[in-house]
Length: 478
Image (cartoon, rainbow, N blue to C red):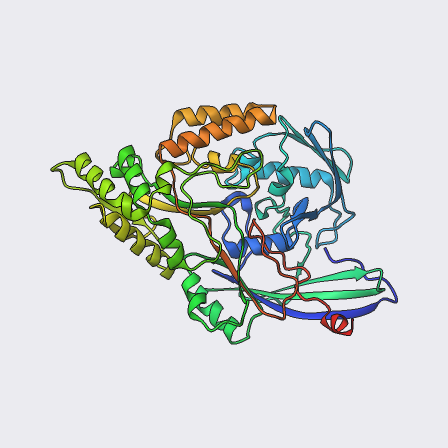
């Protein structure tokens, strides 16, 4: 929330920063009502901070809580709240925060991340400013989850910052304001952000024409719009995002339920050619559910067939396809993809690769009866649990009950080594069953002008709007 302005401090204005998020105009919504769009997530992160929040580089910094302690056994997190008020002037209390958090993870909530907080035992206010979250088992990634916009603290549609929505804001261009006191410099700085939403093509055009300073929320689907424009040098930035980008069966019947077919399809994909077509630097092919760099697990071993050049794999795969179907007509697979240039690149690659082994493909709109659909999601923490639990029965049409048993065992395990071992076994079963045909990591991109100095890429692809503009005059003087 806006810091108090001290009497006698010199006031400085960093200037208004214009930000566009790809999508509809940002608006305040209830995270318990369902998944957030990217414009909604950016807005909630910046006007409805949680107990903690992310800084520009994806590190945990204080939010509503000014500090916190974790017990040695990792089963209790104790948060001390800032002395802070809601926009209407009423005091924020630990009782209110506890009630709002419990609402987000209640059984009737449709918050998409509520399952990640399944280890929470109790959320208890200890005093008006002290809150305890007790766990059934240690969860070192709790703070990363609480920093996500899905756990923003909102009361009657209002949050506590770090920005406030200024009066007179228009629905398609919200003016966000905050003041920051610098005690060392004896000054108070005012930050202003004009936040809007636009379709990808329009947002890129606005950036090229210098009508906006920052574009957020780009994905693989709209990347060609950015690639087609004459962008300033170093304007296009890619987050080193973690998560899921690949295909899953879209229904519990039809050809996608055939395990041998799923294995053939996965091995037939030229993942490097797809990466080259999307033109994303540093992106690597991936054929496993788990990715390198997750806490508690060794980097996954790529399947043996990945070491065989795609040209050498195709003849055998085509023969295996003929042997599997014999004289039967091979299925024409339907893939649900958005109507976007990046999705068309992906479809052309899949049509070429699967066509080489005799399988035809049809692209259909999301929501229609498809055989496969694309998962494109960012992981909310560095824990492997989210990756594995994304494929439990009830979440996907085709699942493995034995993997579910391993997940259940991992959730109740109190020893980290045991828990991670069970998660690794579940991930291996999901790979063996090809319940997820991994392609690569998710793609998230932004456009950043040289007027924005406080932007950084990060693995969560979450971007605070605080301190985007530095005090350039002082930097030049130095």
